[in-house]
Structure formats: C-alpha cells, structure tokens
Amino acid sequence: MMTLPLVLRADRRQFVVIGGGAVATRKIQTLVKAGCHPTVISPQVSAEVQALADSGAITLNLEKVGFDQAYPAGAFVVLATDDAEVNKAQADLAKQLGALICRVDDQEGNDFIFPAVVDRSPLLISISSSGASPALTRHIKQRLEAFLPQQYGHLANVVESLRAQVKSVVEATKRPSFWRRWMQSQAPDLILAKQEAKADEITQALLAGEQPSRGEAFLVGAGPGDPDLLTFRALRLIQSADVVFYDRLVNPAIMEFLSPDAERFYVGKARSDHSVPQDGINQLLVQEAKKGKRVLRLKGGDPFIFGRGGEEIEELAAAGVPFQVVPGITAASGCSAYAGIPLTHRDHAQSVRFVTGHLKNGTCDLPWGELIHPSQTLVIYMGLAGLPHICQQLIAHNMPAATPIALVEKGTLPDQKVHVATLETMPSYIETHDIQAPTLTIVGSVVALHETLKWR
Image (tube, rainbow, N blue to C red; front, side, top):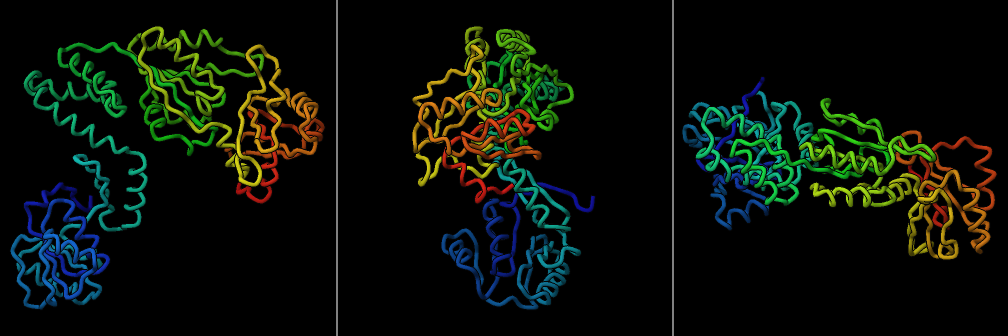
C-alpha cells in the first residue's frame, strides 16, 4: 500500500486551511461535517465559507498568509490556494514546524489526503486512490452510494445498541462467532426492511445459543432482461439467497450475481411446456423456507403483473412462511422505453391497459369491446402465438385496421428487435419473419413515435 487508511477523530485535532476558493470550500465543509472546528486563513472566501464563519462553525482569518506563519506542531494543514508557489512555500514552512500537510495541487509530498466518503453514519466507507486519481475515487463513491441504502446507518446503530447485550451474555472468546452468525442470519435484512420485531426474535434466539430455523421467501422481480434494470434491493437479495427458483425470462447474466453456494432450480414455463406445475412451485417454496433457508423466487419483469406472484404468496401466507415482495420493472415499462414508444402521450393516449394474450385456460378470449378506445394504449403480454387472432378480433370490434402495432422481441436485451406494422398487416408480417419469444405487443397511435424516439 502507498498509504495507510486510518479513521481520525477530527474533533480532537487542530486543522488549518489556507485558501477560501471552491476547492478549499469543499475541504472546509468536509471538516465541519466531521465535527472539526478548523481555522481558515484567506483574504477572500466563498459565500459558503463566510456562512460557516458567521455560524461559528469555523474560525476565519481574513489576512493574507505570511511566510512567517505560525503552525502549531502536530496540526493538520490543508493548502488549497490557487497559487502553487504559495502552497509550496507554506508546505515547507509547516513541515519545518512539525505540522502535517495536504497540498491539493501536489499529492507527492503529502502527509495525509482526503478520501471520498460514503456517509451512512455511523457507518463510513472511505475510498482512496492514494492521490493518483480523484476522479476515480469519486466514480467509485457514486457507485457505492447507489448500492448502499440509507438504512445502513440505522443498521449500524442497531448493531451498536446490541453490543452491550452481547457483551453481557456471550463469552469474549465466542463473540466473534456470534457476530458472524448474526450477520449471516436474516436479522440484518429484516432491519433494513423495517421489520425489527422479527429481527429481534432471531437475535434473541442466537443469544440463547439456538440456531434459528425460521426461513423466509423473497418474491423478486428481475425486470425485463437488462441486468442494469435490477433494483438495488433485488440485487442484495439475489446475492444472499440460499436457494433460488427461477423462470425462463430471467437473464443468465442476472444469475451470475447468485452466490456460488446457492442451490438453483429451474421452474420456467413456456407455452404448453411447464417444467414444474404452478402448484408444485408453490409447495417447493414453502418446503425450502421451512428448512430455515432464504428462498428466492426470481421472476422476469414484475411478479405482480402476469407473474403469478399473488398465487405463490397466498400459499406462503397460508403456510405461515414469512415473505417479502420486491417489485421489478415490468416488461411493458422496460420494453416500451427501450423501443422508444411512450405508453402515454398527451397527443396520443391518456390511458394504458395491460392484458395477457394467454389465459389460464389456454385460450385468447379477451373482452374485445373493452379494449377499443381511441385514446388508449393496449399492451399485450405473451401474445405472439395468438397475435393473428388478436389482430383479427380487434379489427372485428371496430379498431381501425390501420392502427399501428409494434412487436418488441427480446426487449431490453442486446439483440432486441422492434417490428412495426398495422393491425391489418401484422399477421402476414409474422409469417415472413422469424420472431422469437419473449415478445411484448403494443397497440395504439403511440407506436408511430418509434421512428422518432428510438434510441437503441
């Protein structure tokens, strides 16, 4: 390592900042946020620094820094003027007087540097490139900021509050083991999900030396295909699952996020081909959860929109198995966005209707009359096989034959294709093109915007 990362109590150290411009302002704000009361020396300062001085958060000296400046031994001096010669001269002087220095314009001779910080107080994550690339540290910070929810600060507070109890109950030599088991249990995730009573049950069982057998099921929407469209919560649960039941619409790239130790069971369904009947899937979820496992039911799109999620959690609820539902970006939203077809538009459609082209009884007998509306977008899931019949029935129930229709093939994936025709011409179009499922059908005048708004 080029540098040694340490956590410093800033409220117990003396900091001096030379400069009052934009760069100095950021450093001063960081110090104040960390509980420090820095001294700032600069004849001119930004409005933000002046406001901090007016509030008493800093000591401000508006004199120009001199070459006989007195720096207390052991002080931390931040040199952030826009004059490299001044910064160098003050750095040399401060070092001679036993102070530690940080030059923002030259990292080579620095005694300390400011890392990028992800703040989930009291949890802090510092990122440093040892001064090699501040842009890289900011980039990584942004990634971590997005992945770590604000609730992690609350989780850290809960852990802190537990320490005294653990110390009084668990022998010193066994505490590391206890904390490992606690962190690997469902308790942290239950706290993040604001289910602290359930988390406390697990905690008390572990404190009593028991191994909680309480399992839980997570019904998670994996989105329409592109892994970048996963929610952060979905990703965390995918990474922590003990066993996963997944369907055919889950992108293999998403499966790569699973732990190597996770058991995997394919329970996908295609037309007239159900690898595991729905009732069987329901029972498997209950069975595995009752073994004390974290059971992940991973579905393409959103589990509550033609995903049979309601049927599965009904079974879990009846069996007394705790469960959580994590929504995903549904195919209608994801595929239409990636195809450049807005589902609503003030000039085209003021409402949108979702229907499935494949009913439970295997037919495509939809309430045709209700689907005909001039200011409505119609979205049809799982309708590729029955699309000629759908087009025929919509026309027969007075939807204009020239109504634009789009068939989005493998939406949001790298090999996505968008097929555009009309209700009248789409059946013959399908006959002359090799179109593969999964597909989503969009019917309505909004489809005419595809050529203008497509971006992929």
